[in-house]
Length: 116
Image 1 (cartoon, one colour):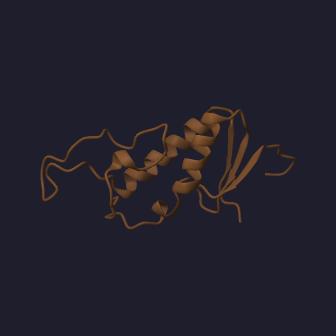
Image 2 (cartoon, one colour):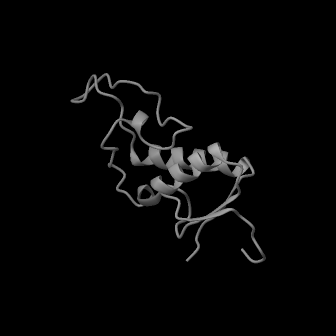
Image 3 (cartoon, one colour):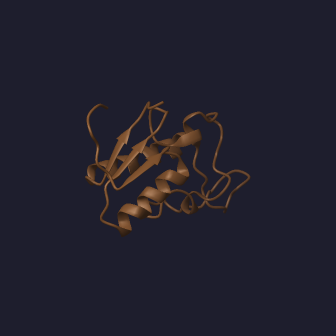
């Protein structure tokens, strides 16, 4: 990392709550944010979750305000036929990577992974 960083906010962590906070913050204020995380990417515990784990709620109601997770579709087969889709761990981590990419390319957010 080295050198001097200037930011209005330092956010420690890049899990679900931190991502939602930063998403709302940069949407409502002209600020610079530095995010640091001990993990290699954004997504928090989803990076370590078992691959068979799914969200406990509809994908459309999870994540950050600016970007919907999933397409708001209904499941058409299986025991949850007719219910809203629930993202897998892989889909959640891909979603957070997409959101982080959008944040960092905005010029408002710098992300530093692997910080301990």
